[in-house]
Image (cartoon, rainbow, N blue to C red; front, top):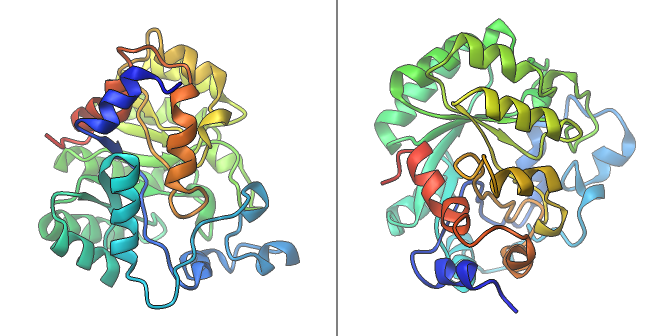
Length: 293
């Protein structure tokens, strides 16, 4: 039986999905930025470089289908009211024009071009009412550690513009080195930028205990279980969300990059969150952290 508090949220105000995308006819286009970093033949043959971790990746658009219509249809079916999308593509522009109440914006940046990244943030903030900056340290070429000083001007810009930054944490799915995303890096960044809101993305495994410890320590550090099917959410995160961390954990999916919305929302009711935590997890934490109200 579905969790009643969960069902009231999806039938009522709806969820905010902090990692949302649009299906493509050629899914491998999303990952061309990693071509220079991937060395093994297996990765080069995959449409998605972490495909070995996912079954039936839903990132395939039928011939003649409109990606925005398909995505909004999935949102409506599952009870997702708002999705956070990356700006800068024709599809994202169309989605924002046709459904301005259903999408909010984020921008991915590369600190290997510090000034270029800062200009992009300012321009996107002005043009699209930017709500977040995102970055994938292990997916950069060369990689840049979370606490590397190359990131510091970007962090400072986020503080100035009152924007959170979403950062991949933990072992990356693609077959690239992991050390730049070790959770210990966040400790130094939180110390140096006490006004910065940082959201750890993609699980933080195998350092989930450390992620929880640092969230207890630093007021501006948060977590989203993106790229995890709900039945695989780390137990430490569920326990933390149900106790002292109810204001720190927020929902993000992985549609269509690795998971279907339908699978996510079929599994979510069994996650084990307390009734009073569901509204925070699915919506109100995101509204507060990302200034969405």
